[in-house]
Length: 314
Image 1: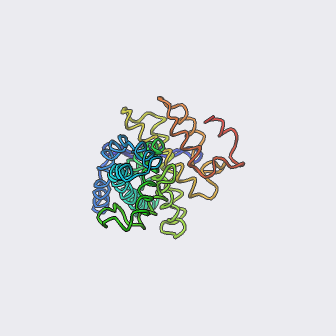
Image 2 (image 1 turned 90 degrees about the vertical axis):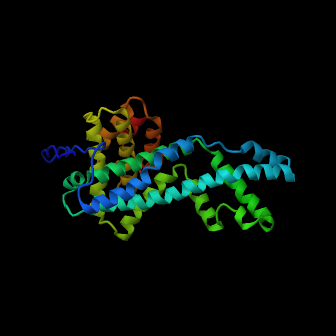
Image 3 (image 1 turned 60 degrees about the vertical axis):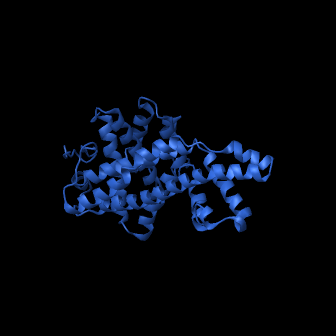
C-alpha cells in the first residue's frame, strides 16, 4: 500500500505516492464501494476490445436509400439491429459509469478524513478505481471519434422504425423511443463518456452534494498527484503510466468544467504548466490526449488563458 512520503513547504506541491497498481481497500465501507466499482470496471476492457471491432453497415444503408425496395431495406434493417443492440449496451454502461463516478468522487472528496492529502492516501484503492474509470472513459471516447458510422447506423434504425412502426412487432424494437432519444443525444457528443462524468460532477456542485471546496480540492489534488507520479517515474509499467496520464488529463478536463475560473487560470491550484509540458513530452506522443485538452475543456480557448500555456500544446 502506498504511503504519504512527505509534505514540503507551502509553495511546493504535496508529494504523495499512491499505489495505483496494488492498493487494496482497508475499511468495511471502502471494501463495499471497491467491490461495486470492480463489478463495473472488470467489464471495461472487454467492452473496449469489442468496440474497437465495431464496423457499421454503411454500404447496405446507402444502397437501401439510393435503391429503395423491400429487399434492400430489409437487408439494411437486419444488419443494423445487432449494431443498435451493441450501442444500447454501451449506453447502459455509460449510465453505470456516471453512477460509479458519483459514488467514487463522493467518497474521495468527502471522506471522514478532512485533510485532502491524507484522504487520498487512506482511500487510495478508490482513487485507483477512479483512475481506471477515467482510463476507460478517455479510451472509449478516442475510439468513438473514429466511429462516425455509429450515428449513421442509429439514424437509419430510427428512420426505419418511424416508417415501419405499424408493421413491426414490439419485439423487433431494440430500445424504447424515450431511450432512443437519450442515446441519440448522448452519442452525438464527440466524447460522450467524459461528458457524462463532467455532467455528474457539475451536478455535485449545483446541488451541493459534495461541498464545492472539497470537490475543487479533491480534483486538483488528484491532478497534482498524478503529475508527481508521472514526473518522478514512480511506476515501471508503461501501461500504468499511460492510464495515469489519461487520468491526469481526464481530471484536468473535469476540473476545468467545475471550477468557475478553470484549470488554466493563473491562480489555479493545479500545476497546469507542468502538467501540459509533461503531456506534450510524453513518449510515445499522445496526440489524442493533447486534443482532449484542446477540445474537451471549457476554458482552453478563453482569451484569459495565457498564450504561453497554449503554445505548449501547439
